[in-house]
Image (tube, rainbow, N blue to C red; front, side):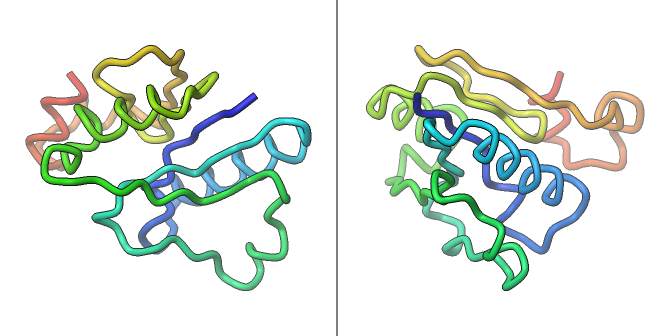
Length: 133
């Protein structure tokens, strides 16, 4: 089975969501060695690298995948990711930080870490608040 996970939280210095993303992906891959897990992110982000400690803990069935996107695909959640999920035939996609694709033929799971986007919208970027609602 092929499972995709949102790797955008891993493209910047890790905060709580980044640590959660890495540890969940690692634990899932270790628990299910017969399945393949891909950490997906668009090519507008720099290549994903793990620090030395994390690199030693990455299971053989967990891969970062930098998805090449053009002008339309740069709208990752609306076009780039749904197109990639459809072409690659994922069994499941896990949105790690409030977001999943707008459309597609792939079942999804969504993690919501807290409700600050709803309770304190003034502390977040307006487009992200609109998307969350």
